[in-house]
Amino acid sequence: MRPMVRAVLATLALWSASGRAAEFLEYQITGTAQQIIGDSSGRPTEPARLVRFSGVFSVLTEPGFAFSGNNFLTSTGSIFSANMLYGSETVDGTTSGLLTYASSYAVASVGGTTNFSLLYDDADTLGGLPTRIASPLATGTLSYSTGNGFINQSFRLSGTIDSFTIIGAVPGFVQFFPTVYLPEPATWITTILGVGLIGVWLRRRQAAVREVGDSMVTA
Image (cartoon, rainbow, N blue to C red; front, side, top):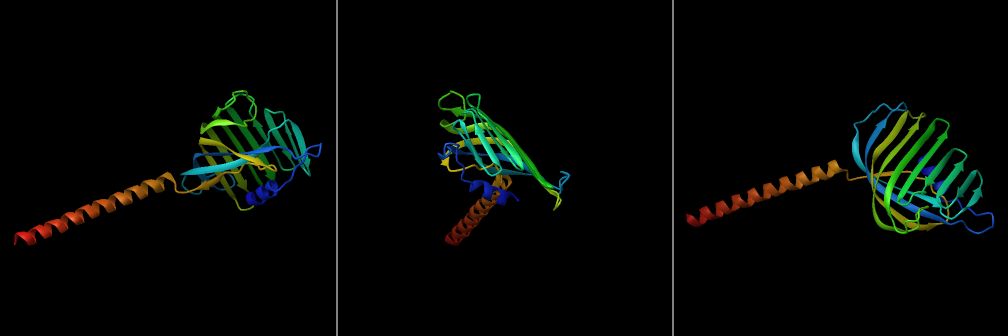
């Protein structure tokens, strides 16, 4: 469901009432979160694990509105909102250096919510939806959940944000959906331990070879 929705939203060409292409900016956040996979009631069916996540979303940064099909988007310059047939999205940049995001969608037995809030280094300190940032470093929290009653499955992420960047201008609206990727911190630890054990083994092997060589020379 998510890839289909994202593909449809990403390909929308939205136009303002004047006929001029609306101005959208695409943003990206990354961070670390606990991932929980469960049944449709939210009960875990797999052990929780720590993962890295990344996600992009776009907003209408200039005051005005755009309409296409069942999507109505509006922006005041500080707050962006999207009201769709199956959901809604709001991005609030009223306070300089603080950005909050909230979205939800529901189609039959499939639905989800996203909420995050982040502090970033605002380059102009004027407030409003950010068009320039001084540094990609950011702090914040993410809460994401989605469920599918048809397959009795749910997916949740709860964690912290550590990066916020502006990708650039895009032609249309993209709603936020996180992408989880590896290696996980646990995998890094396993890899480091594995490399360390190999190093210890090699050092011992080299020492053994030297001892054999020394005994041969002495003999």
